[in-house]
Amino acid sequence: MDTHIKNSTQPVKPYEENRARMLISCPDGPGLVAAVSQFLHEHGANIVQFDQYTMDPEGGMFFMRVEFDLDQLDDRLSNVRADFAAIADKFQMEWKLYPLKQKKKLAIFVSKEDHCLVELLWQWQAGDLDAEISMVISNHADMKEYVESFGIPYYHIPVTPDTKKEAEQKQLEIVADKVDLIVLARYMQIVSPALISPYRNRIINIHHSFLPAFVGGKPYAQAYERGVKIIGATAHYVTEELDGGPIIEQDVQRVSHRDNVNELKRIGRTIERVVLARAVKWHVEDRILVHQNKTVVFN
Image (cartoon, rainbow, N blue to C red):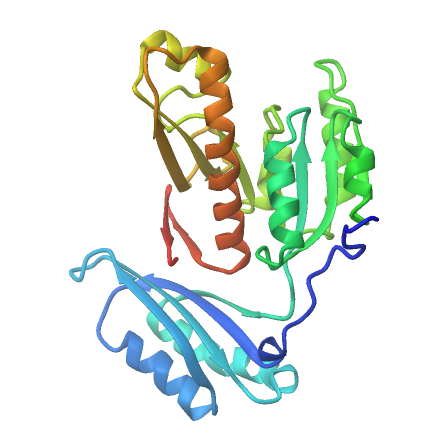
């Protein structure tokens, strides 16, 4: 019996019909919380979750995540956005407003190793990843049948050094205007600025090392040669600097001199899949704000 779900979109939960999230970043100063709270109150909204963080009360940055309910949200959302613009201008806010029932659309890029992809599919199937998996793109055909059993389109685009530019152009054409987030689930290819630019802070990579240690290729071999006692994995947004983008999540596990490179890889796979899944979940739940090359994560 095939138990896979044949729909790549999570159903809208009843409470999500009239719920929205607001993300705000701006220079810190007095009256910010009061202004946002008063605005929502005057518009009849009920705040159900409120997170805030200030980097430095003396001239630093302020970050806020607000989740609220508002009756007839669909009909009133445009007016709420227009009215809030005046407050945003006053406090120099960068802000976004997301209705919860508009699920973020994901494209997962994968190569031959399947553990991170499988974890994302499992969490999505269990209802823990509240998003739409719009497609999987791979430079290998190995997982085509498995992915399509979930009702998810699978695009096989081979990549060689000679065809890399053309392959990436095909990828751009496939994802264009169709996805909100690209997840590099052990894709094992360096993506070019042409792909990064339109998806700034919307491409998440899992690096099989506790960055900034052991950037680039074969980090487990590097770790083994160095004789480390802790290995880890890092989920980060992709920038033009190799493995140098804003870090979202990291985790580690102790190892010993008895663990060879293959053992490090085996241990590392568990860390990788958990760390990547956390980062993707936090992104689709609008829990991450990026400032310069750092992230504020309300989790």
